[in-house]
Length: 355
Image (tube, rainbow, N blue to C red):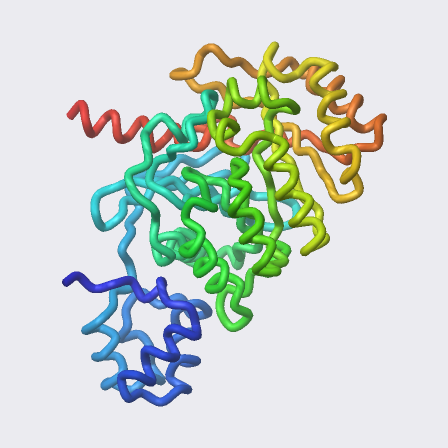
């Protein structure tokens, strides 16, 4: 049986594991500190941990199950990493630089089954879920990369918006959040973490019941069922009425603002009538709504879609704003590299398959 990554353990799980193996409880504090504050590369680097504990950890765990396969660096400082997992699968992780700090976009699944017709992430079908350690390692790997550069830069924000549907991997997602949010470890605040879902209504209820203060984003992309179903097949299972009912439950339980992601597709969902329908859809919850208008990153395999013109995006934005709906335009990072999520992985898999 292969060893598991130690990054898959929450603090409580690590503490339980150590005490169940006849180790003192305080050892968990020591090990946790070496993992997430000192960010060691080998168990033997834990200088204040006794040899017995180190040997026990080496016998049962590994530190790294992922390795960097390649990277792309943009002129704006964005870095897209392609990591290879222990089973040979590939996942993408993206570091983005903003005036408020470093934000990392993580992947939760190998491939995606949601099937949005405009998205590069779904070019390769879902192979499996990532376990919590594989998600945590994406953050640790990026932070270690910053450490090597001696830049003193720290990952301060996380967006769970990479390849896959996070709520389709709910338990591993929650363990990941527990680890990175721990104030004795990476200490990334809950309100600095955003999880995006394509609209799995039943999981929004479950998410609300956790009471988490982590931000929620919903990939909406259309204001009515006919249009949304034509570009997002998930809408057949969770039509807008069912989705908005789950949203109401979330707002009642958590009372936190939701971000609605809206990719601007030329001639598809960018008309003034679409903006007016969106205003109506969110009218009763506009005080806790924010619409994020996203210029589309073109994908060669989905050449039926093009980015909306800048003037159209501006007009859409102004219509929302004039009607009291909070909104903004998210211009992409890494425009000079494979900007769309999933593009780099798809290209590499095709290359390896052809070879």
